[in-house]
Length: 190
Image (spheres, rainbow, N blue to C red):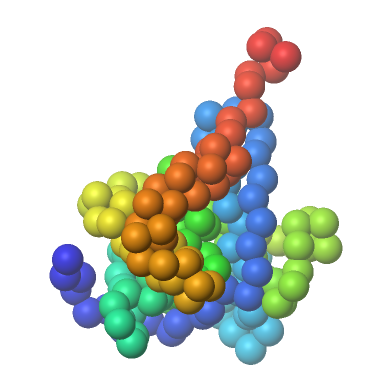
């Protein structure tokens, strides 16, 4: 897997949550990705301005930052074209944010908002957030292998023997997906 080199300011995730709204993305839980933007007024402005618009243009590209023994961080490059031009990359450390990457790929979207380490949806529910559609650009076909490998790596770091970790990883991923991939039923079905 090879991605074009893209220069972007990298913003690591500080916290995450998810929310589902009736009629939005078929009721899927859409991840809320929180990044510390206190020192990034241009990012604050993009979120603020987009909050008053129906749509804007944002291109995306997935990438991988290699560290140690393989992929350890997935980068989501975001290039806002209008109304404000800005290029950033959101950094997902696969331990602990691999399930969030998986959920973004499933939902086809994410919310971007300011948040500090330890923040939750309840503590930031009134914060402005930007909904970004994340279309399939070919990364998902590589993700399954990366996700399994990341889970095995975490299990091994927590003392699981190699064979046990490889066998348990798909079951773990299935359980996480059964929680995060739940969809809100339409109003007529309730």
